Amino acid sequence: MSKEKTGAAKKEYFRQEKKKITKERKEYFEKKRAEAALAKGAAAPKNFQRLTITKNVEEKMPLNKYIAHSGVCSRRDAVDVIKSGKVKINGEVITEPGYKISAGDTVIVSGKKITPVKNLVYILINKPKDYITTTEDERGRKTVLDLIKNATKEKVYPVGRLDRNTSGVLLLTNDGDLTQKLTHPSNEIKKVYAVTLDKPLAKNHFEEILKGVPLEDGIANVDSLAYTDIKDKTQIGIEIHSGRNRIVRRIFEHYGYDVKNLDRVIFAGLTKKNVDRGKWRFLSEKEVRDLKYFKKGK
Image (cartoon, rainbow, N blue to C red):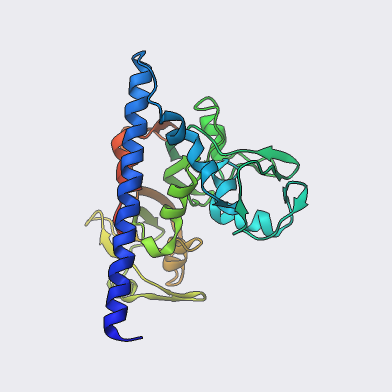
């Protein structure tokens, strides 16, 4: 392919993406205006039904996306659920995540019929230690859902994961599209952690970490690193965008340090400000808009 064609293709791709985002933004605000009108007792706009629920039916939605929109799990986890043979469509087992759902299809997951949710919910919690980031646990351990038992009737799930012994900012939602955006590696979502080590971080290790840490599953790159207390060099602030398992702990363990405390203070621009440990709050409309239309790396 020539450079000219490549450039034209890229230009068309970005044009279509911009068009798509503009359409999504318009529909989001139309929905909010309609909801506000209903709250004041006004008649619902003729297209209100289309904006809230019909869109999911008119479009042929991929099966994994349909499951995520139904509040069962994230889109990524839905892939594993589908491939494990737990999903039936119109009585037939389907193992292809990209299978297109049509209007009128009956979708059963693990013996239960599901449908896309109508009300999207966004909850930020300040996760304490000893809670696991999952919707249920076979061993009966406390999960983050125990912290929001009376928050909503909708079924929400965590966006990404925090280790059992890691505390801090965690988002829960039933918005499958947003979950996909915030967990996909290509979007490089920034996270900031406050770390307490068992001993002061040596200067040479500080510099080596900034250059990239060779781990068993590849180089771990750090966006920013700092001593948060110049008089106590066991207190470290670290900013990363990787979503790899236990990545922060493994970075320091690689150099012989034991992480005594790990707290996520920022995730995708969200902070735990004014949210006590173990408590939660709903996101504001502005926060939801910022998340939906974030730019890569922000």
